[in-house]
Image 1 (spheres, rainbow, N blue to C red):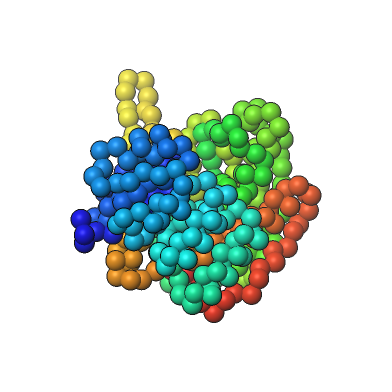
Image 2 (spheres, helix red, strand yellow):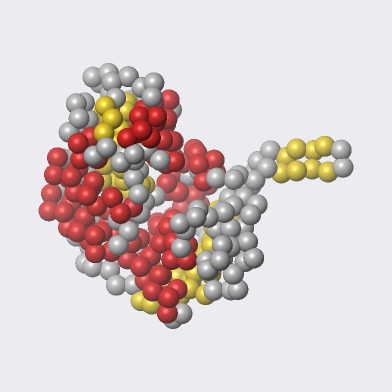
Length: 341
């Protein structure tokens, strides 16, 4: 096991447990060396059957566990800043799930801390950049054959929302993926946001403004719209259409199993993001492990995580005020290329 990258996984909930499984069974070159979760029994359950794993209630203690040489942060967003700063202090490379830090002030502190190091240590978990369809669309747009992108039309639907889900979370949790994907696909920063609110669906919990229609402006003159509907009731759907000067391209149309029986046919619809983006998560973690073993850091940067937090905050203000809100980014440190590939 000495040649394997020893990873401390912080957070053993839905996402963390899936990453533990992935590191153990799917991705080569790494092993789970430590698992931390405030609910220690949950951490023990997630680590059950793995050899050489230590279990902790304190995430910082997990970073100092024997054999740990990298960190995967899958805890709730408010815990990310402490984990990232602790990893930076120890010089440990990190893969941090989104949001990097939920509030822009904390995200700025993380960016400034990494910039002081003079080198990147963190990759942020915007996994859509690793999805095969998104990568094909990115390559097509970068190739220029369709001309300048004019608009992105995006759809983000969930079967149902969790009990703690708030109206603001439609923007700063769900749409945060579209925020990063739009910046990456277009190679442009988002400069302003407006949120429109149709009458809530009858399927939405009382008080939840669901669905919402989010409109972003970019510094390249493109427009990005996102329909976010987290209680659609029938499936998990993510789609994106790029409309350009010379043509358009659309991804996200389901190409899944169609079951035909007497009297009709039924097409399967994914019910969960871990199903729809399973390959993307595998490719993301595999790429991170391979790069880390080479001593490199690739993929979405702390700047990308910071930008997403600032845009999402502006989106929440737009939701609350009903007006157009400008995005105000801090100067970009020289450490970060404008758009991480």
